[in-house]
Length: 305
Image 1: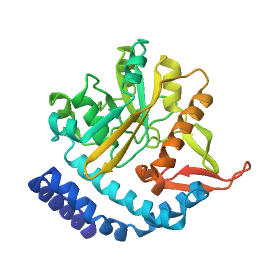
Image 2: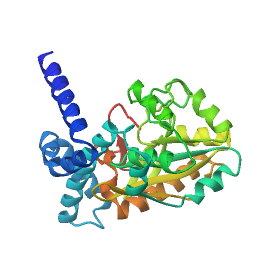
Image 3: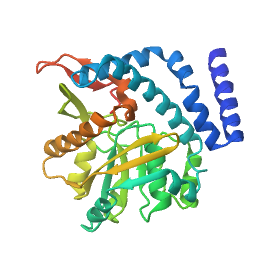
Image 4: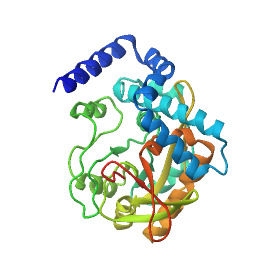
């Protein structure tokens, strides 16, 4: 109990201090003091290192992997700042620190009249990327980052605090706190929704090629796309330097066969990671397990995928 209280007051004090010094200085400190995060979670740092070696060891040297692992910890620290300032970053700031390529792919999907699913993985800048999209364009995505995303379409619970709904009043995007009916309603209205494929717990998985092995991912987002007719749009983001991010929006994937669609998406994601390996925080949650078909990656943490 004492330990819990200590962490509560420590993080609350840190939150207050960062709010007082502002976004720019908070990002600067997150970069400069990310070594503290690496020290506190050295086991995670080792896991990141091992997973990078297992997946892309043919392309990356040990020196490269070490440097990438350190960048991942920096990006995780900066993501914490982005969460803290999520509803405080104004439109002009978003416009100055974010650039989008492939924005026409969203328009192409929306023109089909079935809505679109922006499918991403967790990176150090994905929260900022979604916020900037809502603040600087006409697209206001409904964002779902879930702990409970079962393929039997039960409840969907958002990780963020209730107060982040204020983003809707700020002119960005609305965050639903209800069940999956919200996703279907948004897609039926030809809106776009954002889902992180590596943040949902599922009962049914798809085994997809990934690096030298395969990875288990939830079939949930692809089932939703198939049922609604919505397009899957790969949505990836990368830190360029400091606060600046680049958002890469892939071509729409129209889902007929969920395994083929998932393979197509993961192929796009793997290509992104080959040039931006530091921009996936879930390297810290991968575990390589043996199966009857050979080694396969799973996302650990209650199989949170």
